[in-house]
Image 1: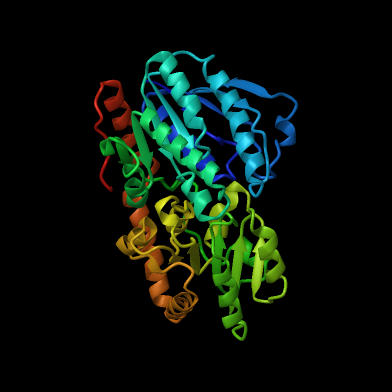
Image 2: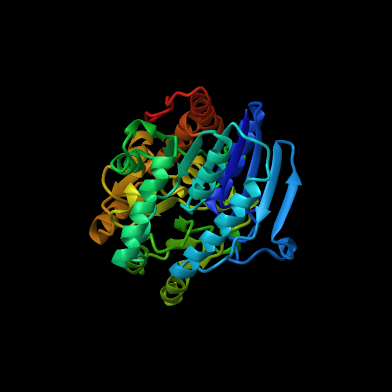
Length: 416
């Protein structure tokens, strides 16, 4: 089967979680005998500017063992500048559509969101060739932007919601990461059967279990500490006030240290309050090859998502934590996909979002039982080895693609 994938990031642009997801999916499908053309951006996510070695040309094409990659100018902007970011997405989408139309006819076109505008490019190309268009939704827009208050102009909100429904109508199939997201999208489409749940995966070759005496701990003087870590996007969707409250509550416990490892729109604010607390360490993203070392440095990981966002966003960091064999404390909507997986795996505890008292109580219970923490970590790794591998994800997409090509609508609708 010849496949065409339109995505915001692709290797080596792996600081964005979607780059990791799409890169591994492409390779896994190639191993199953499929040919894939990828249209994506020039690498830019890490510094929010095109990497120097990739600058100079707005369009690059390369031949690969699985097919080809065309990389186009991403119009990089800061996440906090919503109007500029929206215009950048429009420009990027136009380039993606133009690049995709130069490629041979595919059997299926898949677009990844965000940005949601890539769906417009995908539907244009799919209509040109008369082939199915599959829309992969990682985060649901405009819902995330509305929940965060980044999108609040009534006319713009109304247009964005209308555009979202238009995209769903044009797609032959829509894939989401969780039951929460599926419920959200099914309420907006005429045919709920076109919505399929395909969870993200964990690359078990890249993320493995390590001893806690890591290089990361050694470099930062944490060898004798109990480390509570948040690792991932330091953005507007996360409630870092909980970490600040926990650091204050444990200020007289020199054996407990809080680590925030990552970058994003909220990083400056986090840096400011962390600088005044001796038991908080903030570090930049580690290189890709050091992910096991960093994730394995924690005795307990945190997943922090603000109230109401679980219906539109599923934190991808969950999967890496489980693969590293570490337990987690999730502050997230009750009944959300993260809460369900944590419960299914027996890998930790979840509490209501932005509830400081519940968060501190759960944190105390977990830190007071290190034996149970170790057992939770072992269960976490066992769960991903059974349910969340790249091969499972690729097989689900392959089944969906074949159903689309044969004219059916069948696919992996149910939770794995």
